[in-house]
Length: 390
Image 1: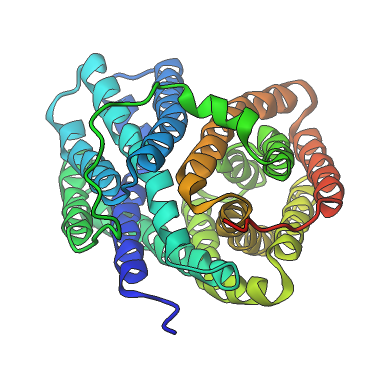
Image 2: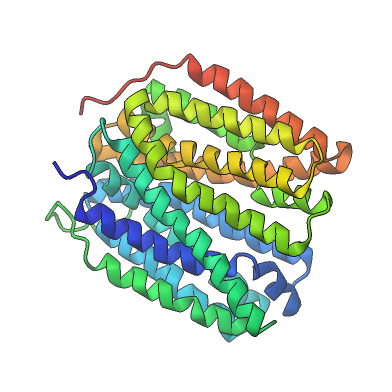
């Protein structure tokens, strides 16, 4: 049986193109916003609203996808919204417009995420889900390498031409949307037009299998202390790395992630998704403990290497494990519900990290997070590895 199917290839290419477009803009987004008059406070409000939109909508649209029995329309609409938001950012600079467009971009992520992951789950079996989700994460993260490299290359010859870069980013976004038209739903059931309640996914938490709640609960505690990668980059910067080195170490992290996700997924299918997830969390803890100690330029490249391995061993693997715990009819709701709570915890995490950094210094921030990660490892190690029979 062919493991990496045509549908998985197409979805993975879609993610690669979309991430190329998004990551092309990630390094310059704060600079661009400040250039058009946004204060740091306003940028924080913008990102907070955008991420909250993505978080809550993942649960809503995941639940809607399961209820309708369809996946592809959500995938197509989600990627289309993200693509169209790129050139719109460059058209006008009024704060209200920027808030609206950024929200459209994150809404696109919320619309597509759970349905896309449900397709990946449907295209796999419990025995090869690590490989499937790992392959997708690998292709997705290739975009996170290509995007910043393209931005660096463009700005090298056209410094401060940020608006043009937003227009250039539209091209890979369009390629992603075109690719989504090649995916077909397995079900011929017409999509239901009656929408479910926006917070209907919250009811799933009460009805879901107890083992799902235990796993998701443990991962959410971890997320609550897993702050934005910006804090890792700030640590490298404060230790003496110049701007170019900071960008390079971020690209290096994504490259390690991209190269490792697929083979780690294959290994996870052999040794167990649970075991691989725990290994990934231990790598995370080691990285954060290491960040508490100042070091040289090469020292931080080593830490970002282990951080890339952590990401490869957890992000796709956790979704694969979750999808194995629930019935096929509820995969999108289960992943969407988890992703919704995860986004909320991620928002709080950066605030917690900021307060720790301000009050006790960067070392305390990283040591605290590392200790929490070890605690989650001990908790998850006691959970049984169960799969759904439905």
